[in-house]
Length: 128
Image (cartoon, rainbow, N blue to C red; front, side, top):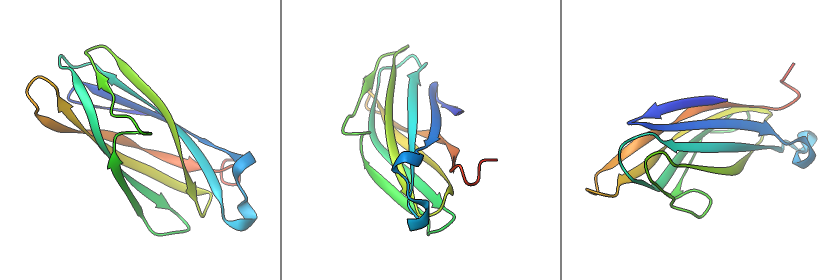
């Protein structure tokens, strides 16, 4: 589990290898990751966009961008948090992800970027 804080917004990520959905002999490794976003700032904020950098030991770097997270653009009052689970597939059993959320302060419309800390994606074949 890793965490990072940007402008009072704490992002915590925990990744899990999913062997029951993976086929290592076919170069298909499935990982899920649980993200918790805590608004410890004094402002009401909304998550507008996300950008991920996915590093796979068996493939090129992949950039994934889009609106919100898992179909939502949550608004968080001070002290509130939002949690979601998503996933990714790798061609190898070894990789990592990192990224950023584009947030907006509801009161004044100012936008700021929140760091998603880098986390490891390690399958059982590498986890000894």
